[in-house]
Amino acid sequence: YTCSKARSFDFEDGDVHMSSHEHRFRMFSSVEYEGQLYMTPQNFIESVTMSEPRNISFVNCVFLFFCQELEKILTETPPVWRGSSKLFRNLRERGIISYTEYLFLLCILTKPHAGFKIAFNMFDADGNQMVDKREFLVLQEIFRKKNEKKGRKGDAEKSAQLVRMLVLKKDSQEFVARSYWDVLRRSASQVLFSDLAERADESMTIDTTLLVHFFGKKGKAELTFDDFYRFMDNLQTEVLEIEFLTYSKGMTTISEEDFAKILLRFTNVENISAYLENVRQSIPDEKGITFDEFRSFFQFLNNLEDFAIAMQMYNFASRSIGQDEFARAVYVATGLKLTRHLVNTIFKIFDVDHDDQLSYKEFIGIMKDRLHRGARGYKSVERATSFRSCLKKELASR
Image (cartoon, rainbow, N blue to C red; front, top):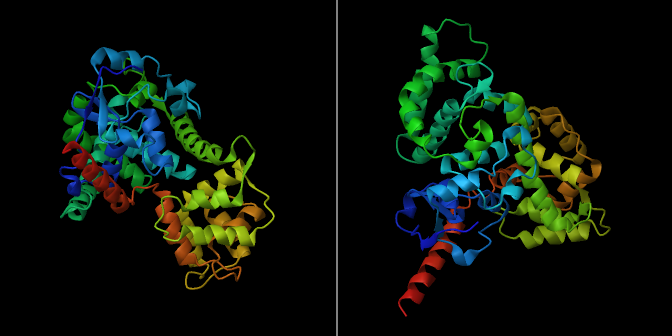
């Protein structure tokens, strides 16, 4: 698309108060509309698959959109029933994603399939098995409020108070609660709509790619669970396909070493080269990792908490475990059967002692970092941003 104007956007002032999510959102955003920053679909894909923006020279620069330009771009957004695992790649720069939508999409990427229904029910505040635009905006506002308060004094107390309000509200309801989530969802329809609906209505004046995709150009369509499930599954698949294809280069497999590189990306592992050397020595005869194996591992990763519980119940938390115990725990926790070659590769990556055993605690810690796709890497990003800021100021002074 052709942007009317580009200008510099100073992200350095007040950075110390930003959450890691907000910092990363600002670093990858390339569009401004009516004074607000937005990502394009391409920006979002880069933010979850790359350590820094592709065009690093344009960091801190945004393009201004005007109303007619945005309307024209949004007409190219397909309806949800025409969605696919290439939606973001097809749209590329032709769309905008708000910060709250960015948080929502990040949540989807780490959500196990078993949690899709819970996520849908949280949006479906009136319990009619359909999500309309207003319900979606209200829950988006909760995402924003929760994130902007995270890490600030009193956040835990306020969150606990909100939950108590939601749960206690059930006493005035004329229904039998089937579960905690049922109580939370139905209570939210009263408590949260009265508290946040006004802000949500203000947000409705600016349509985004997701809003048009879910609810149509007029905002009157409703989202079914089947459409919602398909969208979440497609998004997870699309991100994994992009990561896999980056290394496969047209082949049906990636090397075990490349698999290790992808796993260790976005983690706090300092000596990654040692892990890679470990793989080269332990697996001299390269067999390769297929996309099905690749996807099954990341589906397991989205169930990491359940896996950790399973390991504790197996009473292995205090000592290393073997491949058979690992594969069994994965199956018990997730229902996924990882191939023997995939399990062996995982062990070769993390088996630094060469005893064919896996350090449970170390593995969980590293994979938790990987699961958040750079959201915890604020300190390293901050240093890079500060360097770019100093360089920019130095060049400007000459």
